[in-house]
Length: 436
View (cartoon, one colour):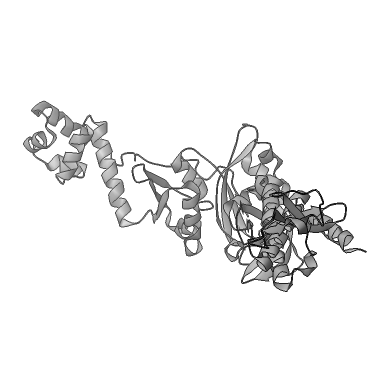
């Protein structure tokens, strides 16, 4: 096989295997040889490099100006010398001469050419990979574990490799070379000198995509995953809702005999998954999110974006979870700060009494400002109010004598145990929920 045929074969194979445009590779080779010529002769020579497709070789031509008095042999040629090659050439015209072959440029020049070709090949390959995968960012890809580098896993995706960093790996499972693996394509980088494709198995989106793959109702848009929170390899929570009243979103995700959710659990190496119904009401939503714990009362603070959750004494450890895991995941899921307390906590009793007392005042015609003044004056119960002089009530609440007397009468007759402002509906905990 001739050298020309060999170069053409190598060029065609590289373009086919890497998916690189052949014209780009030819341009890279020409640039590389041009660089090698400059390396050997300097940049003074006017040279032209062309890839001869017919011969399958790179041709190098040197151009010199025809003169009758030569000052620089690198750029000029005497007319008598030039007419030996081109009999009718005239002064000031350019004479093109074919130079030696690429193999004669020398080791240093050849090394320079090799570096240019490799650089251009990598640039072209990066562009190919970016074009191939940019539309697949945010999807689940299937690959084979190729090797391990400083804790990261290199995953072969067929045409190229991707990297699964250490923080993207589920801690409880170890893979070995040759294992097949699913991962979420988190990022496709354009100009990265390292790996362009970044994978993850620990992000929330991977959990969501796995459910999309397992649950047809999610893929069809009937069931929607509103939120997800994970502690990879240990426990996760997702909140689901349905766009159709006759479709149970939790049941759809669980599947017959738990088949659908079990497939996701197996892929996540046994990660426990709670599937709860989403609700636009934060109090109701947090009750669902804290499942399997039962909640008795939720106090919503819109300004602070926080929820004070009261649970029975025997439910406190369940609500908080092992090392705070349950309440931590619930907080991430609802995106509110959650403070879980036992019903018997002293501070809660005081808060409940204060809330009930102000509610009682408002229900009996006292505006919020006046009710606040009464509470600030240290009158925090019906008994204290009854014992307060009428003149003091008139002064504190800015009431006339008749209004103050009527208010004292109403408060005295009020039944004990006024209703609280923020309570969970009685059917709390009856909503369908799934726990794996």
